[in-house]
Length: 150
Figure (cartoon, rainbow, N blue to C red):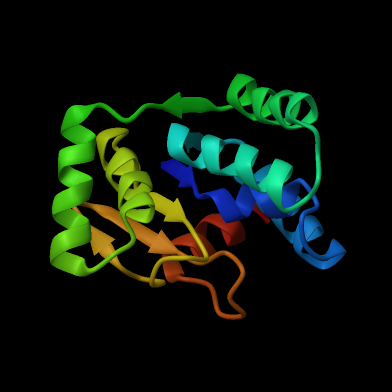
């Protein structure tokens, strides 16, 4: 199963929130490591921005942190086809454009899940299901993956 990560999962894993969120995000990524984790380039860019603007890291520190993620995960870009799909999605479903870009990139990468706290849990678009990994009651697809992992 291919799983795309939204920015918030990475932000929490980097400690830009509570220790509880950091622990949860890191455990989630570790538990899903056997699956094909995918990083939309938009999420990597947003992570850099959050690390510098919100967390006060230097651009060099943020670059190193983002580089660690891009080295560890498959990165999917945003070409014109992906961006066109994202603008259609943003228009038809009233999503923020950058959330739509991340979801469209997950579709392009043939992901089954997009782990995101920002989009509606359970929303399905072109075969990709959005699952909020920080909800008390996990989406069944994510819950089954994590349960199978033990």
